[in-house]
Length: 130
Image (tube, rainbow, N blue to C red; front, side, top):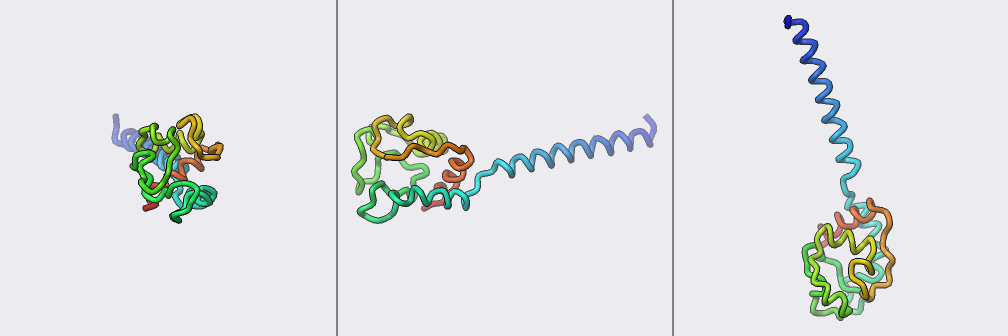
């Protein structure tokens, strides 16, 4: 291969790799969770899940990584107490999508969120909600 041909092949390869990298980064940014949007979506949850002692639901402050039904100052349903979950990404995603499917018999009167992006964004918010 002559020097000119090598330069042409090299330049083409660099352009292809750069394009693939740019597409990968754009896809990652488009799918990255948005905690600020999650906070806005969470406002629906905050109606019941506040830090007030007389709140309808338990506080979700610090929920990420916590064991289900573990706050001593809240009276959980038997179903939630027995669920024995750790609120990680997978558990939260399944629960926020369909609470009754994840923990049958829980008392939360919420049908779930249907948009996976909204769910991911709420989870991103909950990770930092401490």
